[in-house]
Image 1: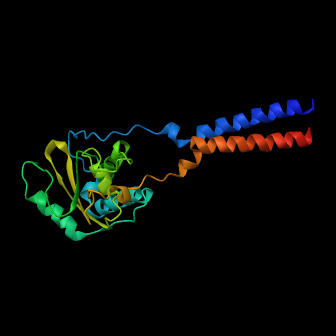
Image 2: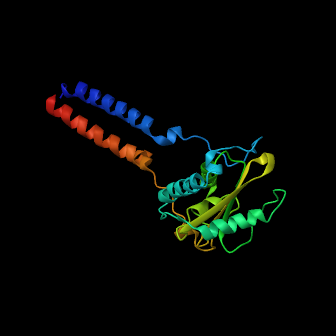
Image 3: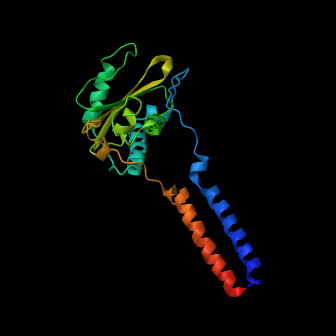
Length: 221
C-alpha cells in the first residue's frame, strides 16, 4: 500500500493540471464586452457593404442567418417587397427624421455603423439584456428578438446616407416577430459549441480523470 501513495499523488497532480488546461480553453473566460451604443461617424463611409447592392444584401443575409442558426431559427431569405417598402419609407423622409414606420411588418433600425454586418451584430448583442425566464418584449432587446424570431422567414432592407451620422439602415421582417405571448417558443437560448466546457461538465470530467488515472496508478504501483 505504501508504494501506491506516491503514484496516487502524481495522478492527482496530473489531473489538476489537465483541469487547468481545460479551464483555459473555456471560451467564457475570453468573452469580449459588447456595446449596443451607436456612435455617429464623422463622415459617411464608402464601405462596399453600403455602396454595393449585392454586397449589402449578402451581408444582411449572412450575418442575420449566423445568429438565427445559433438560436435554432431557420434561415431567412431576401424579399424584394420588404426591401422596396423600406426604401420607399426612407425616400419619403427628409432631414434624416427617421423613426419606425408603423407598417405591417417587423422592423429593425440602426444608424451610424461602419457596415451592414456591424449593425446586425449590434442588434444581436442585445441578447445580453434579454431575460429568457420572463420571455417578453422590452425596448432594450426588441431588435434581437425580431432578428432570431423563429416564425420569421423573410427579410428586406434599405439604407440611406444620413448626414454626418453616416448610414441609416432599415430592415423589414415577415412574418412579424415580437408577438406578445409567443416569446418563450419563438426565441431560443443561444447554442454554443463551448457548452462542453461548462463548469459542471468540467467537474464531471475531472472526477473521471481522477478515477481513471488513480486506477492506472494502483495497477502499476
